[in-house]
Length: 244
Ligand SMILES: C[S@@+](CC[C@H](N)C(=O)[O-])C[C@H]1O[C@@H](n2cnc3c(N)ncnc32)[C@H](O)[C@@H]1O
Image (cartoon, rainbow, N blue to C red; front, side, top):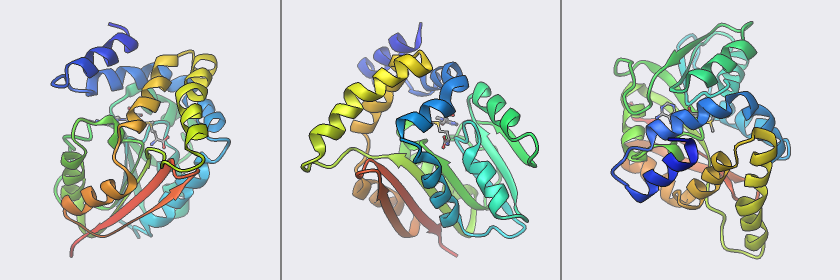
């Protein structure tokens, strides 16, 4: 089944896990992922990742986990920003991890293949857990947040970057137009995979609002939950802390 058919099938049958289709999709677009990101966000994407890494706060000489690390940008920024920490970049797409390993071969980062739903780490392992564009892609964001909380040390930080559905204001028609037509169009020419980027649009429109996602962090047991929006409110960075 190709990516397009698989994603359609999943939508029609909600009991089917998103995981295998998402994994195949990212394996297929790994080579063009970075270029597509830069173009689609008008070069803003690294700024948001730097904000994420700032919110992580210094893990000292402890461990930082970057989940859904993809081609590794957040993991690499974490490693470069906090010189003493040890960083694991984890993802279930082998091709994304291969790109990450090539791009950041000079940095000491441990690349790990794993599924965010079942993390192969002991309770209370990490000073911080970050993830960019993960929660939109999982079946149950609350369960993943609970799993993240499990592996965080007491007092540890979680920071999440993701798209959020655009708010209904004066700019809404333009933003919606860009999401509906602009992004899939760019996906067709840059990534040669229109379906993958139509999926990005669909999953963003159906995703939690920034307020609802903050409430989910609280429900998962995090404290001091907050968020900031970027890019006309279509990008959100959420954070929280595991209680001491
Ligand atoms: C849009 S990319 C984001 C990559 C990177 N965080 C960034 O900032 O560019 C989403 C990544 O999440 C990974 N992913 C999605 N669901 C996952 C899961 N259940 N477990 C592990 N990785 C997952 C995909 O393989 C993909 O590499």
